[in-house]
Length: 63
Image (tube, rainbow, N blue to C red):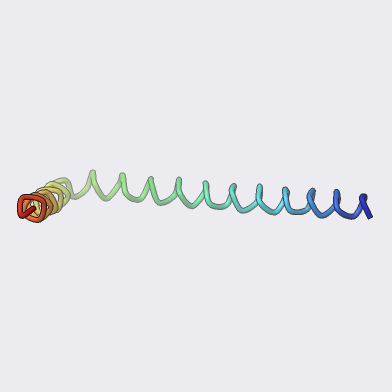
């Protein structure tokens, strides 16, 4: 019984490691795509950031 519990823990550890690796790969891919988009459309990003800042500032100043 102890052996099967250890095997289950090993399997769970491998499954978690596999999922973490997959998530890290997706995050790297998304990061590269975001970097390319920002470099191709810098003024769009500046406009979005300014708009978000104005909206956030307006909401926070009402308090």
